[in-house]
Length: 234
Image 1 (cartoon, rainbow, N blue to C red):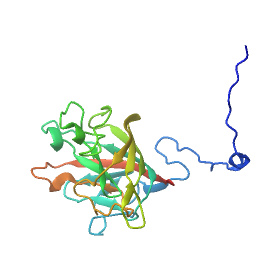
Image 2 (tube, helix red, strand yellow; image 1 turned 30 degrees about the horizontal axis):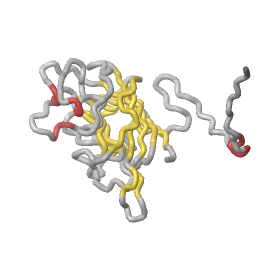
Image 3 (cartoon, one colour; image 1 turned 45 degrees about the horizontal axis):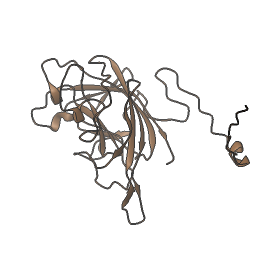
Image 4 (cartoon, rainbow, N blue to C red; image 1 turned 180 degrees about the vertical axis):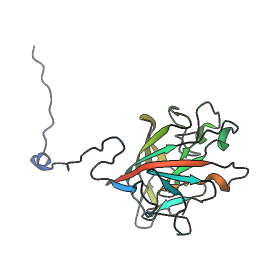
């Protein structure tokens, strides 16, 4: 008895469409087609919400943001993108919950992926590290704790709008936290509080949150490095 396998016929044109060659980055380096958002040398590509020069320090290839410098965001907006961010949290054993090393990575300046020390630090689950804040609980908690470099690898697709600027398809976020899948193509239904703008049909910046404006927030020093983006088509 013979078994026949059905192989779909592909148009000849598909075989001719070679994808672009991309050289993967070595440790600490971006892929060859990536845009370096922070090169470890200056804050030239970053501003405050008021458009003023960002006040985070740059030392040893790191962006060092202390409480009070304000949110910092890229000068240039982004659309659909693959985004890589590395961060290091300070040890704050005297703090609990949302007060322990709180920051956030805002996509389009609107949708926050929470940054928090979530190692042995219970809080509400849609506000822990790796959460799409207030919307989606992470699938796992791979937090490494303070003093260690951690990473977010994000695939973001913004909402799709029609000619009347109405959303016809929600945006989505996929997130790997320290290499572990914690958000699997989840829809973004609404902007997070503190969004740069509520206009979901427009591109927005990548924003790193300063938590000092929140009631009783303690002094915090967040470190970031190796931030890059690969623009994607829809």
